[in-house]
Each structure stands twice: as structure tokens, then as C-alpha cells.
Image (cartoon, rainbow over all chains, first blue to last red; front, top):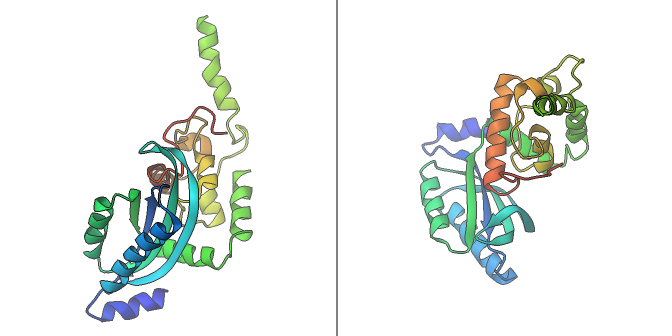
Length: 136
Length: 91
């Protein structure tokens, strides 16, 4: 990943790493959810960004009610895009009534490595165990 | 009555996760953890008390550099409803 970033900066377009968690309302049907997700997926790629990873957590219980609903469909996008794409992306989130909550975070180099390792399933056992040992 | 009120906070501190006698260490430095995932609720739960408040460094032993990241991650987790803002019995 690190080498990839360097090769990118030599070009005119600089892409940065971002991650967005979107919470959709639980009232959506599966079809509607797919529709909504594909719309945002398309937004990323249309603007010259690249989708790195995507994760669907399914219907998840919220820690506290949002808009009087106690569950929500979580969806995670990890992508590389131009920095000025984010404001457009978030504006679309705010206008969308299907979205209850969203969070976009820019990822630093440690986060990118962490996500990559998490995807490879490296610390489902390894690092989590380490973390738990640290707690003791 | 006054004595009882004074006694409770001390008891709370004694039951905190880190043993008071043992020397504290920063678990991030020790284990080489460089990034805190705000989506990992189980891990973040170690840094909040049962009301959902962020535990101070003096109890967890976390170094200042990582305490800032812990706080940031917990705030993010709260925003996306992975952690509650408040709660009576989280643990």
C-alpha cells in the first residue's frame, strides 16, 4: 500500500484514503438497501476514486435509539478519492432520507495497514489475543 | 453518613481493572498497537467505566499519545452507535 501511495502522488491527481460508515434505516427492504448502496458505490468510482473495500454488517442493534429506531443497516466503504470529493459525498448522505447517521474518517498510514491486515483475517486470533493479554 | 460517602469512591478505585500494586504500562506501546479501531466495541469497552465514561490515564496506564487516540476512537464509536453515550451497566 505504501508504495502505491507514492506512485499515485507522482501523478497529478492525489488520492487519499477514507472510510465511511453509513447507517441506513431498518425500514428498507433488501432491494432498497442494495439500491442505495450501489448508488454510493457508483458515486465513488464516478468521481475517479477507487473502492478499496466494502463491508455489510447487516441489521445491527444500535447502542442507543436514533430517530426512534433501535436497529440499523450498517455499511462500510473504504476507498481512495480526491479530498474535495468528501464534501459532495457527505452532502448526498445528508440529503438522503434513508440514511440515519454517517461517519467519514480519513485514514492514516497505520489505519490503512490495520484495515488491510484485518481483511486478511490476520488478527482474528493473533492481535486480539495480544490485546487481551495487554488488558490483563 | 459522611464517612460512607467518602468511602465509596475509594472502593471504586480499588476495583478498577489494573491492580494498584503492579506497575502500570501502556498497552499500546507494549504490544505495538498503532491504530485503534473505532468499530471494535469490545476493545473500546476496556477504556470506559460501566457508565460509559472514558477512564482516566491514571487508571488504565495508557500513555498520553494513545490516550488521545482512545478518546477519539470512543467518540467516533459513540457517534455511529457502536458505544452508548451513557449507560447504567455496560459491564
